[in-house]
Length: 200
Image 1 (cartoon, rainbow, N blue to C red):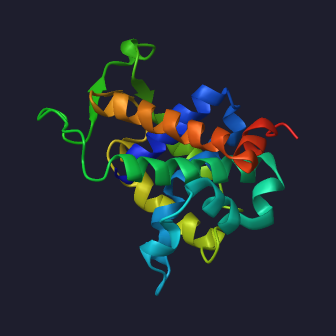
Image 2 (cartoon, helix red, strand yellow; image 1 turned 120 degrees about the horizontal axis):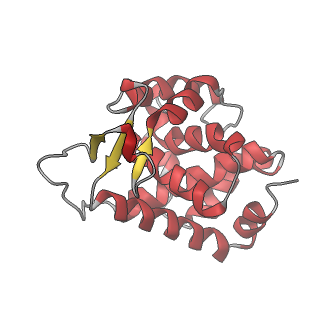
């Protein structure tokens, strides 16, 4: 999965949990956070790719900050979703149709309410406005902040506005990754507590 696809998983997860739009920014930052190791010299990918339980590892890396506020909890949940998505999609289990190699096809705004149609504007605005406040082990918030510009520069996010159809099989893969991330969170006591206490 690429950065844009991870953002889709975070959006799917937020929708499944019925979390408010005020948490979108931190969820989007959490969705790109594991790839922000590229912003830190000497920090390898393996630090953020656990070989053991993903949920417990992420909560350990996030430390006390993951329980402090709804925004930090939302961030941690999206980090889990990113790692689960990577695990499920490596090696590639899906091939996008030739007419949509990125997984998106632009559609008229009139189709905005159709299934699997994504409104790019709110995602881009949330990514640009939000500042990372959560650390992830050796990964400081500033590194995640820097990484978001790479995500914003990817198509179709760089278009800034418009509605795009998420084509199959990507739409189903995104949904599967979000569902699996939720299941793993609920399997772990600390993960379930994280999901159940966001209003606090």
